[in-house]
Image (tube, rainbow, N blue to C red; front, side):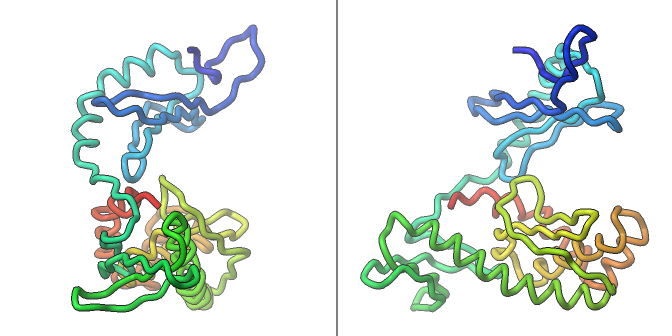
Length: 251
């Protein structure tokens, strides 16, 4: 297989992205090879939850260089992936964090398909009604509703402080980032962040809203981020340490 983006004077301009698979320690993972005009060297990244790999390469790099790079870093990949947490499947009887607090998932099929928060002798619960087969989707929809309500209010609060408005606020299930801000003011957030503690959710919103004014990660950006969320460093460290576990949960 050849990489479509490698330059060849006799062929049309190739695509900047190549998608394939790569086997690491018996696991077959999707691999994205992305050409970046600003890249001066190859960089390798493991997606959150160990769900895929990404290599960024300089323009015109030959296929052999990518293969050698992967071979050199095979041991590093195996070590890092060995530390990735298991990917628990959402099902009755397991605990799922909501705002950082573990809730036992309880299935009650006798009622209509809704989700409610409660508690029993074992602690907080998330009670999902309706057919068992629809449980993951109903829980996903619940987290999305919570995200719209909670994050929507935080966006309004932080945008008022920076004097900028968000053009739109969207919610996705992204594996490589928790949030984003486009140059025209569109904010996006992973609804999975609702499993994190409230201060971490607030930090994420403050981070993306700060980008409405500072589209970079320079000193001015971090100063603004700290003004919006004084607990930035602790929350940032929490997300870096625990984010992979949240991304690994299978809905």
